[in-house]
Image (tube, rainbow, N blue to C red):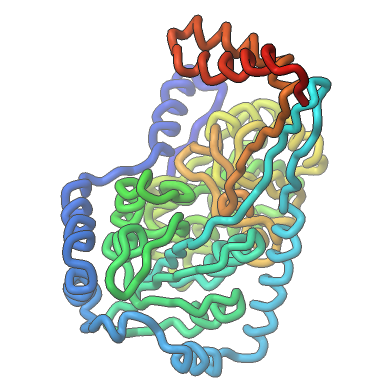
Length: 437
């Protein structure tokens, strides 16, 4: 874990190194992923089943790639009522927030008589990737599927790896709650390839969303352009700005809540109080001894964790903007004032009783957020990711008479003769016609 103080003469050098750590941690996996995608594109189901056997030790046939409706229903019977209720609360809150995002179109007529506008339409088909492995995330099912449903997407195809055939019942239950009926027991780059290019069994989609491991991220990168994607997910991260008015134990737990995701997760505390920082560091050590995922959290904290001591909260925000975190907690007395200065963050959590973990499950806004400092230019998953904008124009003869000459002039200036003629020919016809409308 790194400790930096803005008063130190070498702070800028050390902080620059920290920023570089926040950039995506890439692996040299381009070629093996390209091989997998090529095989899926050429051999379809055959390659898909072979890779599933190789990587997940699961023997499948084209007929058993998908979960049957009976299997999904049976998985739901394994869910305790308390968990069902919590899942429903989370889904309802996510639905309400994302329904409020639905955009309205534009339509108006200007002073030339031209009608202009823009309308929104949903994508036809979306692929959802749900990670398996060290942890399974039913919350990610809800966060990915519900906005797509609200946007009006008609077909959702979900892929979830089931290593050695082990099924996560809660993931299937979350899919059922979100209204997904097309679910495949496949993962990795091969699943991304199947969704992007299609096979005899799996029809291709138009966009793929959802986090995964480095191979999944690289596969999404390589199929982008053939299909749309949400983003390239890097290590998850949180920045916590806290002062001495905060409970050091809960701040330590907030840091560890991020660290327990995986060894590459990044947790950073920024505080103007050095004594408070030391208490939090000791609290982290104490809480680590109690966590079931302590080895993962400790590795993350020791490898990627950081504590930054600043002169004041304004300096804390300046550093947070440079870090452009996926998650930003403002654990201070007046979070709203501090929030007004935040420029770069995927999601912000305001106040001592609003930890980031709330947003992971039951807050309502999406928890699929930009990582690796991409919050400088990117946003979290939303209804807009599942919709397209189409502009339109409508104008009669009088409108063309008023705006057409300028278009002809610009087309001629660009040397595009046919462009100019397609307009001027109509203008000439208007000028020779006794009447026009």
